[in-house]
Image (cartoon, rainbow, N blue to C red):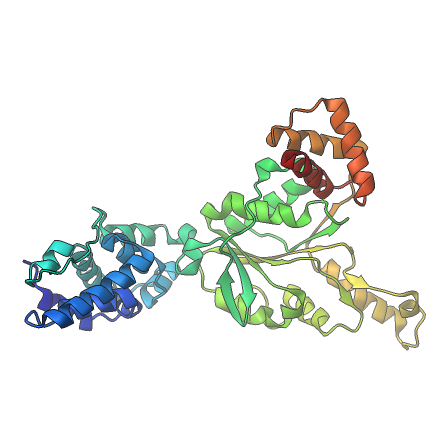
Length: 393
């Protein structure tokens, strides 16, 4: 029989994985293990509380505890990411992992054996995995797997001053995209330089709507996230928070694309200066594990009127240079132009193959052109909408 009293006492001494100890399921299990075996009613109540908490996530105790350990953001995992773990901290973690290993192996039969009751007690599973070995393996590859929410997710949003995961990210893959190969390769090459800790540029993808600018960035993240690449999308009206986001990511071992979609400014926009300072020249610059990828329908990013060039500004040329300077601070600028007829039809044909559309090439071209004419002109987006329309029929 396992020594439940020792396990409960050991739990009180856990320091590094305190968040795991305070988890509802683990706390309920420890409360059950410390129950007075002579009080059947109290025992059944605590057993029920634990099962309820466990079943919400998993019916396997080993898997449950393993997930908690894998996702825990603690001082050890952060120091491991920086390669700065002291012998004292390493020893503490070694002992605490041994405790969780033993806790994860407690079976429902172990617990039921300490009480005599005629009431049915639901059971749980114990998979053969070693939570200690799994955690040690995670630490050995932390620079590509990450930790906390970054280990489980690949795309994120900045919301209410916090970085939160996108549970259902766009699944677009590079293999599903056709056309714009030269443009896309430039973004891929820059991203690979980031992943290899080589010099890389902030990137501005500009051009016509629906030409695949945003999809290119998302597809690249889906392609290379297992190499340690993550994406965090920031809205234009959140640009003032960029220094805070960068600070949150500075010590993370992963590589991050800060993604700003459909970027444009008016000439008196307060967010203009916030982005300009980050891209170059500000005190709070970006770190080596971060690049900024922005998409825009405007090459110069700033909406101008003729009156702006003929206004009453004394130093008019300086004002114009200020407006033009923002896009110049992106080291790599890539144009995604509206496709001509041949490129559009090539994209349509490739998508038709992916969706198993069995239509003659000539008929496909005629219908694709007609669809584009009715829906704002040729673009990769229009091509995909046309093929999805055919697939739905």
